[in-house]
Amino acid sequence: MIQSAETLPTWDLSDLYSGVDDPRLEADMQAGRARAEEFARRFRGSIAVAELSAGHLRAALDEYEALLRNQYRPQAFASLLFSTNTQDPARGALLQKSREFGSAVGIHLVFFDLEIGQIPAATYDAVSATPELAPYRHYLDHQRKLAAHNLSEPEEKILVETANVRGQAFSRLSTEINTRTRFRLEREGQVQELTQSQVLALLHDPDRGVRQAAAESVTAALKHNAHLSTFIYNTLLHEKDVLDRLRRYEVPAAGRHLDNELSGEVVEVMSQVCADNFDIVAEYYHLKRRLLGLDELTHYDRYAPIAGEEEAIPFAQAQGLVLEAFGSFSPRLAEMAAPFFSKRWIDAALADGKRGGAFCAGITPDHHPYVLLNYTSQPRDVMTLAHELGHGIHDILASRNHLLDYYPVLPMAETASTFGEILVFEHLQKSLSSPQDRLALLCHKIEDTFATVFRQIAMYRFEQEAHQARRTQGELPAEKFDALWQKHMQAMFGDALKLGEGHACWWSYIPHIVSTPFYVYAYAFGELLVLALYACYQREGQAFVEKYFSLLAAGGSRSPAELVGAMGFDIASREFWQGGCDLIRQRVEEAKKLAG
Ligand SMILES: [Zn+2]
Image (cartoon, rainbow, N blue to C red; front, side, top):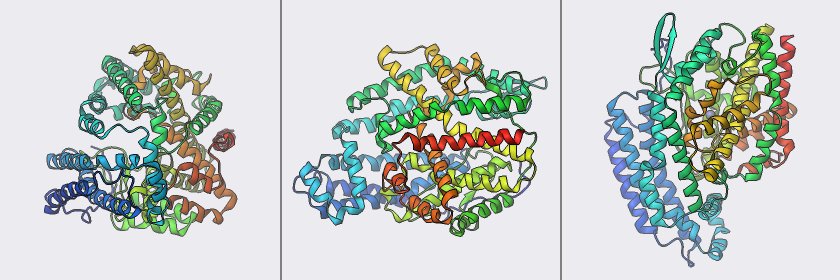
């Protein structure tokens, strides 16, 4: 395993439960099941009625919200505990138990949102306008919109109960294939068998030979799995086609747009503006080719580092950097981040069996969030720390909402995290004196932004065409997906970088494409929104700070169009999205200047 020279923080979960064998866990789960049964007994059949009163619906919503809050505590504990040691069978068993608990509770609750959707229109109009229901108005209105696509209760129950033997089973199979696949690579005369994250990390190696070998290894392994991956993807596309037909969704992405509380037109405007700005990517890769001193670039040169070795940053220094950067925006921002360190809400250690990557887990409005990282002392880990703390601050500010409005919708969910990263990036950039270091950091940032904005939009456009093709042409061969992938990904790079043939099958390891269709565009939405917000901060200074905090404090209580509209922007306009793209172009111009 990777060793770290310093002792990294681990989190303290004791304010949830004391451990796997805390008797309160079992007691809370039992009580949760009983409470859900009682809820169904008390309210089932009493919501979708003409004589419904506002007081009765309010009582049901309060109870529903409270029982979900109680349900999330053991579930969150089980999943947090598992994430720091996935090899411990006791933790695995607790996680499984908490999931079964979730399904056992969920089955009693299916009726509730369905009945909200079936309240007669005249009754709904009368009760939803009362002050009693004002706090739940946004939740209720959204459920009414979703209801247009609901099936009957027995049908929905069958879908809930069979979820794990349909699409979810295929998407789990895809995850298992990806985690089990070993990538063979010859290095220093020895054949190594690498995991996916190990082999993908080599695409960042300064040695082109290593990058090329890693890319060939990725291609060989994905080709070996091509039959399975193609079968799985075809099956998932077909299942979605069937469910979309039953639920009366007109286009493949419509269900996602509705969940995101966005109109399809807004997403199409954003997607088109991004595609119209793909030349920014090409412009940058012309520069990168020159900096790398290569005649031409191909897919394994995309992530080649501009500078050599990067300096290690100990965790304590990262903490200082992030708190300083946050504090220079507003002392309140630094104050909100401080308890993550002082109260041990962060687990940053490296350990065998700990899951990779990073996340922030918001629990409930009445319980603080937790952050998980794998801190390897690289400058990008400082960015990750800023990112996850941004999420944490979003959760803390949004905690004035009830649970049903607590979590931001997907397109807004990366606002505070991305904003936190920009603050730290600008802070780091100012602290560097050599143009070479500043260029390296800037190139890093530009490539990250490309990955979040343009690459996600290219993937979104790939998905749109793949879903459409499966619907009109039936089951598709691997070559068809390969050709679509190559077409949409190449579009970003223009003539600055030519993706090699070996890259064509690389769609098959992207988990979002397989498991959560059309998830990807939310990343582009979030990043472009934050660029616009940051430009606003640069113009307005301190006047912006309070507006920004109230945007975050709204949590999921309003739609993205309303939230962003309150900041003075119109997400339906081309200009809004073009403004974000212009800021990315400025960074590329700055990199060209630094490169001389
Ligand atoms: Zn994030």
